[in-house]
Image 1 (cartoon, rainbow, N blue to C red):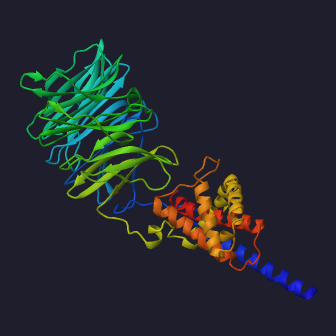
Image 2 (tube, rainbow, N blue to C red; image 1 turned 180 degrees about the horizontal axis):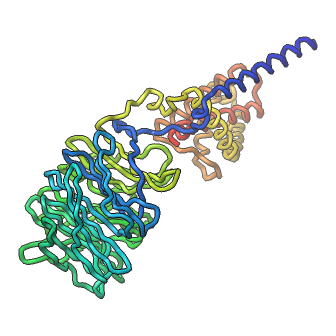
Image 3 (cartoon, rainbow, N blue to C red; image 1 turned 180 degrees about the vertical axis):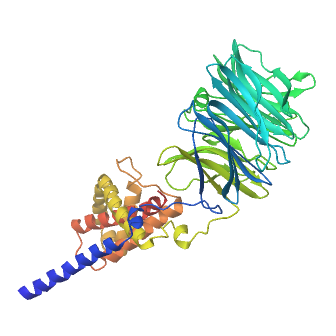
Length: 530
C-alpha cells in the first residue's frame, strides 16, 4: 500500500515538473500576450514613420507623383519647434528638410500645385511680433526662400489654407479689437489679395477654406458668443463675400481640444464636418452638412461619436476619417462614401489626429501614436497591401502562440465564469425553489434526466429576467443567447447522466453546473474580443 502511494506521489511530481518545464520553454512574447489584436479586414500592417510633436493642431500629409509629403512641427518645447518637410517614397524617407527651426509655431499648411511644387505657409509667434510666412520648393529639394506675408503686433492664430494650382488661399483669425477672419491669396511668392471677411463683435476663430472646380472660394469658421458656438459659411463672389450662413452649432469643448472644421468641395456641393455636442449629450460627436449652390444647407446629421474629422483627399465623394472613442482610448475610424464605418486602430494604443488621402481605389490613413520612449509618432495604414489574415486570427486567437492563448483564454474565462455564477446566487436559489415545487407534481418528477435539466434551464432563463441582483455577460444577439443555453444544457446532461440519486443536492449541483457552463460559453466571445 505504501509502495503504491509512493508511485502516485512520484507520478504527480513528474507531472508538475513537466508543467513547469513547459512554462519555462514558452517564449516570453507568448507569455505576455493575454489578448489578440483585432485587425481591420482588407488593411495593411501599421507602419511607423517618424517622431513628431503635438504642439500644432494637426500635421499634414498629401500625395502626388513624387511620393507622399509630410509637414510637421517637431520638438519637445513649444517655443523651439522645427517645421519639417519629409518626402516618403516606397515606404522610406527620401528627403527631410527643416524649413524653419527653433520657432514658436501656431499652425501650418502644406499644399501641392500638381506640377511638383510644394507650397508651405506657417504662422509664427514671437515677443517682437507675429507673422505669417510662405515658401515654395520643388522635388528634389534645392533650397527655399522665406517670404513674409504678414507681420503684425496683433494676435493672429488658426491659420488654414488651400492650394489651387499655383495659388495658395490662406485664412486666419486676427484680433482687431475683436477676432475677425482674414483672407489672402499668394501667387509666385506675392500677396495678390488681402481681405477681412467678418466684422462682428463675436469671436471668429478656426477658419477653413477650399476652392471648387469653378474657382469659387468657400469659407467656414466658428463664431463664438454668449449664445454658444455657431458654424458659419460664406463664399467669395465678384461682389465680395456672401452674408454668413449658419449651418450648425459647434462646441467650446471642441475648440479647447484643438478641433477644426473639415471643408471640401465635390462638384457643385460643399461639405462641412466638425465636432459638437448633440442635445442631452456631453460627449463630442461628428456632424456633417452639405451645401448645394452656395445657399441651401442640409440639416446637420450626426455621423458618430468622436472629434477631429478630416475629409479624405482625392476622392470623388465625401469620405471621412475621425478620432473616435474606444475601450482602450482614442481610435481612428474611416467612413467610405456610401459605406460602413471601419475601426482602423489595432491593439491597445490610443491613436488620434487622423489625416488621409486616396489614390484611385486605395486609401492611405495616417495618425499619431504616443511613443513609449517619449514624444509622438506618425503611423500609417492602407488598403493597397492588405495583411494576410490567418485562420487563428479570424477566430480571434494569437497566431504566434495559439495553444498558449487557448489555454489562457480557457482559464481566464473559467475563473470569470465562476465569479459571474457567484453573483447569480439569488437567481439560483429562486430557481431551485421553483424546481422543488414542480417536483411535487408526479408528472414532472417521473420524467427523464434530460427533461429535468431542460426544465431547470428554462426556469433559470426565465428567472434571470426578474429584477434579482445579478451580473450578466454581454450577449451578441439572439443566436448567441440560444447557443449558450443549449451548450450549457447538453453539457450538464453529459456530466450528470451517470448520477442515479436525485434530491436537493442534485438540484443545486445541476443548477451550479448549468450556470457555470452558461456563463462560460457566454463570456468566451467577450473575452476573445476584449
